[in-house]
Image 1 (cartoon, protein in one colour):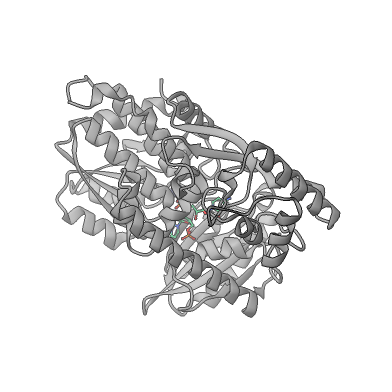
Image 2 (cartoon, rainbow, N blue to C red; image 1 turned 90 degrees about the horizontal axis):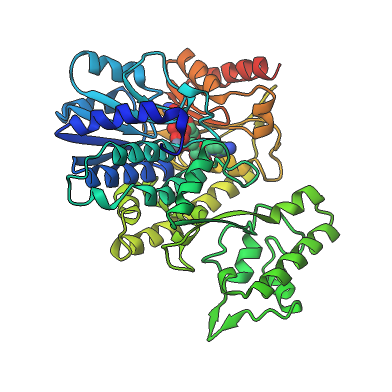
Length: 478
Ligand code: C5P
Ligand code: C5P
Ligand code: ZN
């Protein structure tokens, strides 16, 4: 039995169909979840002895689906997208262009297809309980189960080692609830643990415990802001020095992973105390400690050792048209591709920080039920959603209202990203429906998840679009 029993039958059907194919085109999305999805699919197909090729797309629109049909592959495995574009995909299927196999977690469109693996079809939450990489992992496990052990590699693997990548995908899609993977994702965490590739632990829940120099780890922490330490280089250094923590060893900055258990304990409890003393509410300060996912086969002190840092590294490649680099890293390249990915990561960090600064300086417009900003050409359309999500925590932006962001996408199109919060979703917000409806009303296309969704609309339609979004969100939040 696979890691998600409710999806087992569908997964086995999809796996059998893939085994009938002479070769498979894998098409996937250009973010951390999409890259890990593709890597899991590629590895599992390779182990099953099925020839394949991988392509990445920014958005799976009609043109891209038509281009995929042109490749002449008769079997196309869509990962981390496809469900939302099923109407268009089904047209090609009906015409006999190719047969789709879909492993996705986005809100499905109306058409149906035979080989469709999606948690939402089984009432499993696609925003919190299973990512695209999770769906691909369920499929990979089914591929192993349907094997006859005939190919050279498949008898050696049940594909459980791929659970580590599935967790990177889920973390990259921000599926953790209060820092922890839940629901169907738990089955994957357990298999990764059993396979010895993954460890779930409790540790300091700040981004960068593997790679950031200690003072930078504290200074840059945006998860929980601590007065006198966050955004305060001298303050962060002074705080650590007062605790008597050695900051450098042999001339190199020490990182969180370099500390002894005792030192970690000292720093963590001092941080907590400082936060409480400086007025951070207890429920917020407690978030300093949380669940972490460690990839045990990766070297300590590298981006790949921690699921969160790994996923950011992947976003730094694929969202800048270098999905090939991210895929190579996922598939084990620790030399050339890894080096290139690190350079891309520096660029990505800089762009996110510039994007956020821009939002802080220019502020957001308020409507009745939401807030929005237009980044024009200043923020790349592939990362404007990440910036919008980060903006929900900054001064001048209401953390309790949905946020919508625009960015130019060529001459004729505008990219839209929408982000909400778990609390708003609890109150009825469903941005996937919002984006689909509002985009449809102005001649665009949209989709996604309840808490995060996006769209592409014709340039010039922004005002009309926002009015529509405002109306639909108003209805949802009643
Ligand atoms: O296309 P895909 O499903 O991979 O993308 C999901 C997007 O939703 C990611 O960009 C992720 O960061 C975002 N998200 C979010 N907040 C959540 C869940 C997902 O911003 N709570
Ligand atoms: O691009 P962004 O990160 O804002 O996308 C948020 C979510 O909306 C992702 O899951 C993405 O796949 C989805 N989306 C979509 N259709 C679009 C744009 C985004 O389904 N046209
Ligand atoms: Zn995804």
